[in-house]
Image (spheres, rainbow, N blue to C red):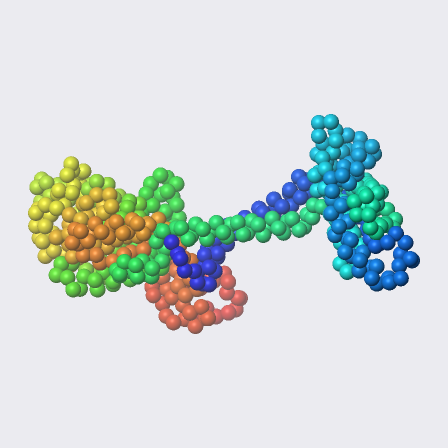
Length: 508
């Protein structure tokens, strides 16, 4: 839940959903246009102006200005009389005598005996005074232009009689008659289209802010660091490669390794940064053994653990990766290894450790898979045999990394508290909630396990382009200055495309 939005936060939030905002704005505009064009009935207007005099014969008045002032005072009284049910009913009787029932039904609400409801006629009328005058403007709007004009003319006919009867002072006159206007005044298609687009825009923006306000998933590493007072070991951006797409489409797993040929450069660098931060975190500990886990399943722990191990091995350290998730082992699938023998066989004293470690899976990297699923994984990981195994292996390897199950689901990872230097939690961007992390933190604290920090996985920020590039032929990365001056190359420099060279130009 974000309670304090800065201008930057608002702009970023809206830009992240710009496509959705555009779509809803277009849909709103299309709805406004469609309803105005094909649903709403056409409306026609007609109007007439009535003039109020304080005396029936204005020439008899000695003070003309005083007469006009007094007439203005009568205007509001006359307007109320014109809206009275008695006057409106008189107009309705004239309408009934002028038009057939079907025409009246199209414009008004009819009672069972065919009488027009007074409220229905009143809804068609707009009666107002003209500023700084003693004039009353009457406007009628109806589905039929003839009906609209007839309402105005009928009202001017019946009004004088009721005015004299109700007020008894002054008179009301008209000049001319209301005209039939065949140009519709409503609906306003352009106005309704713009209104619909604005409504769609406001609706989706409100929804975006409401969802974001009540969204308690982790989306910011700085907030994560400040809230839990733990280090951010690294950030891994979300990405998609052709190989990952093929695996998903074929029903396989979407796990990847840093050694895959189409891994983006920024992902490789992210794991190198994680390697550096982990090394610093372990520098004050006697054991270079640590576990990697998460609050819940599906947050990318196994993939992250495998690639941390690869990055460590690429630095020249002798690394052992142990798949300690004996319930749902994954590491053998990531590296394409057999899982007949592994950690469960060693802890069950059925095999020696050397027989269950698969050597040189990659340069400087050995892997011990989980092995067959045992009936008591938690007990095995918390056993004395596990502590003895790690002590023995620590003398053979520079770093030992353990892939463990989610701490909020089972206690397997927590059973390793006395055997490892600490634990790293992988947090999935936009999936892991604050409640999940709070629960996981309490469990880790209760187990007296050292919390090394977080890895924020699957971040959806756009990566910058233009500085780093990749040679499509060699598959290696190089860097360049986008303004044109090359700083140098990491890996192979891309060869110039001979097809683009001009004839006669020298080759490099």
